[in-house]
Figure 1 (spheres, rainbow, N blue to C red):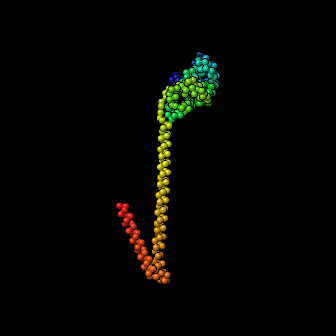
Figure 2 (tube, rainbow, N blue to C red):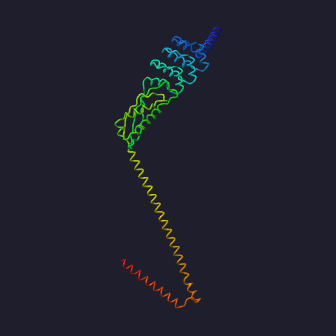
Figure 3 (cartoon, one colour):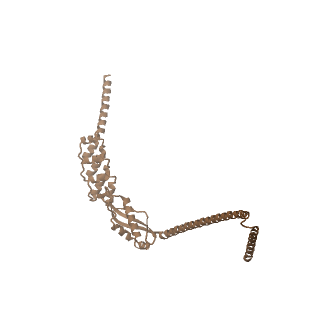
Length: 329
């Protein structure tokens, strides 16, 4: 019974010891310390424990430091930890420093860390600095002075400028500036055929302008990949202008016609007003005659003579109208 109780107590103590050792090994990365020691990286156990307390994963610091030490770089572990806490990518920075060291490109850790924190891929920047990349522009349309559209595609060979990576403009700015140079060169040409015969004039004009200033790249060369002839913009603009002039002329003619119709209607209205006055005046004649007969201003014979004269006038007018109609027929 006593032996059974001692075995149970021994087992409990062993389990507790195993748990304590597991917790210790998890909190204190002894295996990582041993790897660093045999890799030539001098780091103390207290430093690794301090990383745990600062919520820094030791593997993310020590393994890149081992890689840098093996490559011959001398870095401070505190700088690596500070860059990690700032949200940087330690592996990318170390790879960039190693690549720069092999290519004899002057690059310090502070500079590489700043480029990384700026959001740029510092390792890719070093690669582009060693092996230039080609940026291809889309087709850019420009119009020569003779009105013919020319569409140009260019290939720009650039090399990363490490010193201007922080704060320097990117590829979109390079493409925009090259497009501006293409439009300027084609637009200053008298004939579009001059651009087709001598496309390297575009490259010379763009290179002479120093379009890479203020960018993160250095332009090495600009090659014209393709030149196409587009639409006849001049003729199209003239056609559109002629159509616009025609519409304006039609509008003015319609305005004049409307004014003429309005004037004619005004004249008709005036004639109708005059006829109304004549009718009104004629309606007063019988009354005036009656008043004159009544007052004795005219006699009966005068009235009959006047009626005969009017009848004779009407008859002559009717005969004249019939004769005129017969002659017209």
